[in-house]
Structure formats: C-alpha cells, structure tokens
Length: 133
Image (cartoon, rainbow, N blue to C red):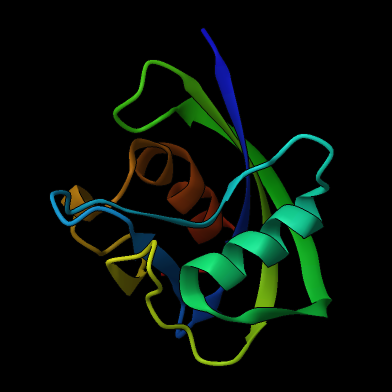
C-alpha cells in the first residue's frame, strides 16, 4: 500500500484544534498542512501550506514537534503518515481559495466531521496528552 507523507500544524485554542474543510461536498475537516514536496523540509511544507490554506504565517520560535501518526488515508486506498507540530499563527486564520471552512474541534465534536486518522489516532493522542478536551 502506498504511503502519503504529510506535515501538519496543530493550532490550539480553548482545548480545541483548528481543522480545515477542503470540499463543499464533504463534511470532513482535516488537519492544517499538506503533502511534503520533494526536497522540502517539514517546516518549509508547513509554512507553504499554512499560507495557502488560511493565509497566516507561523511564529517559527513556537514550533514544537508533537508526534508522528500513521493510519488509513480518509477516502483513499493508501496510508497517511502525519508528522505533527504544534505552533502559533501570525494573523487570524481565514479560509482561502483551497479551503471551504475552518473550525475548532475536540473529542466531543461530531465524529462525522473528522477524518479517520483524526478519529482513531490523532485526537485520542492529543486528549491523552492534555492538548484538547
């Protein structure tokens, strides 16, 4: 099975994590970030994706590696490997041309809005470590 490699930025507010919805036809939100391009570092990927998705910069001194997650990619016949970092945004997040909507989620949020990897792997880990409710 092929593996998709993604760098993700976890932004927290009030014990919830920022998620983005990319498709008008779907209720599913995803972690902020995206596929790592060839020759690109995780940080370069995060800076590019955060700018593209929510038109913000990242406060580089705030970036901290959290964990690496791997599970089935939502709606794809592939595995998704996510290297997740925590960081603070410079600016107010707003949906860009790639993004339909942004939202704040925790383990109490409607499960239909979460990707498989978020439901089964990422959110339980974040709750266990005190980042989200």
